[in-house]
Length: 409
Image 1 (cartoon, rainbow, N blue to C red):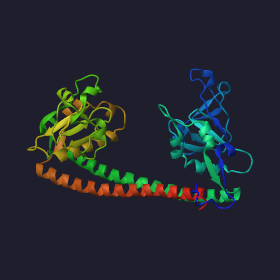
Image 2 (image 1 turned 120 degrees about the vertical axis):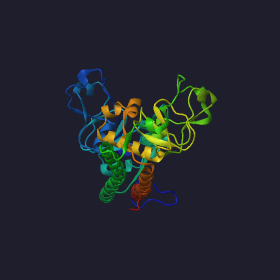
Image 3 (image 1 turned 60 degrees about the horizontal axis):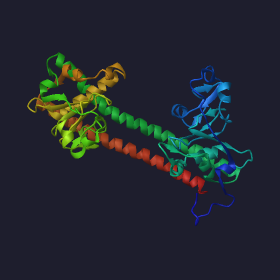
């Protein structure tokens, strides 16, 4: 809406949602009652339908029976109803092209039959509400916005012909923006895959060179001064008396979020924490074997980590620490290529103890690292460029919407 010093154009109105919409809350029939669900014919909507279909709902994955429908205060919402999430994932929204019911996470907004408001206009307006809804949400264990507060939200709108013009413009503009985003997201994906492909190529060539004797095949333990799991003996592991000291404590998430080097940590151990753990030196390679499988990174500071992480202190006479970390990245890509499931679920200490990896001469390792560093730098530049473009497209959407609902489109 416009500020007080910038009034809306002539003919525009400002009303509360409760004045222009009937608003209904959803409900969930008892799951234990099979007769409420088995062979159901009434569409029952949840947030998963948005995740699968997007914001235009043409079907629902779940259906309820007439008995299930009658067991609650649930309402059968007509086509062109707006579905607005007011619990947990506050601000999610959609428009329905079918009649449906919804769970209690969503409110159904049904435009009143007085030719004042276009459902498609309300749909676009709903895309601007997340911040406002969060600001008025009740702060319990999860965010919650009552129907009373939803009814009080103000919407600015012009006469119906102007609404139709605005919706047509938004349809065309957002279709173009969404296409640009899809192309950019694909370019971003391709950029990441380019680096992974090069890593994979080195690993595959390395396997061939092990077989023909050009490169020596060794286990990680054979090229390490120390190879073993981290330590976190104390139980429970989240005991407060272990934390908030001077010793960085690395967890699997810290390793997953790093790029080659681990430069940040989320927690620290104190002297009590250190006494039941182990302090690993700068340059240690970390490998996750639980939660985030086969993620790797090199410590840039002394740190502790739990037994869900393997630590490798390489023998610098035999190998290059950057080469080993890159090699392990390629191993992760190789595992991912096998598909999720058994390949990843079975990763443990033995996976790395028994696996032969290719190790060329130190000089050749350094040459490979130099190429990978250069490629990673260029890849990161491209990723930043594409990510900025995605951010710009999101901002463009916001700008267009702001103009639309301020009468400036």
